[in-house]
Image (cartoon, rainbow, N blue to C red):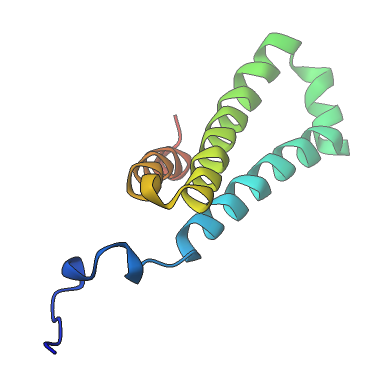
Length: 101
């Protein structure tokens, strides 16, 4: 029996659940953090200074990116056949978090 040196030859069996779980956790924490900040005293002070459409423009993109990242990560966990594509989507939306708008 030959040993395989190239991890790409091993196929899907070498993949783990680590990255999808990290992506889902990261997205969940971002959603919770945005809601917590908006519900805190800082968010209420922000509410007094800025009108509703402006608050939506601040919070909505973050929540949308986090939801897409969460869904892509969960799809990667549930459907291993689509893991590569789902993690590609999660990577793109995770990158947008780090870079900002």
